[in-house]
Length: 207
Image 1 (cartoon, helix red, strand yellow):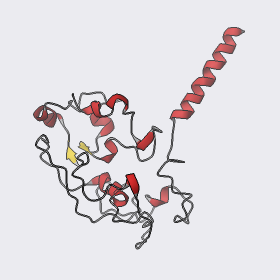
Image 2 (cartoon, one colour; image 1 turned 135 degrees about the vertical axis):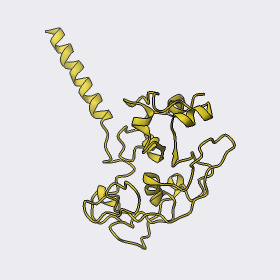
Image 3 (cartoon, one colour; image 1 turned 90 degrees about the horizontal axis):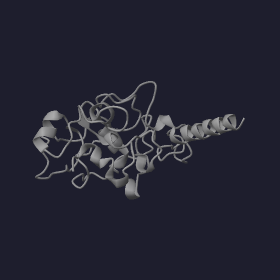
């Protein structure tokens, strides 16, 4: 009987743990359903739409928000060995369509001229020179040329597969390499995994 009670107690704890870590966008920093500028009361509609999506950005996921037209100041460093670093592309351009501060958060569904803009620590701006570079190819060749990076095709990401499988988009580093916009991990700053003891950084950087 005691063994059975212990088993039920263990199953209960495991079920609570599973619930705790199975996070969603609901209640996260990207849940705008309760904001007064979002009169739809919906969560997904600020970024996504099932119909008439904006296809101006490659592989945009049914995009419903105004896309930034800003020209960004890019990261530059003598230690940067990536040769294809350019203006933000793919999902990173979509992220910056709120976080660069040039596009109103409430410019969605074809609306322009909104008045709600990101401020504070969430405002990245158009100067990316002091931010981690994005929109560049990270492959075995770059890892070899750099000498301080792990091979993304063979290195475990800690998320179930390789770095290439789990953290790159089209073999490129993008904002989603480190941030899960849908809050799947439930971690602060929408990180894809904990950065305790620089664990997230050390996934790719061989230091």
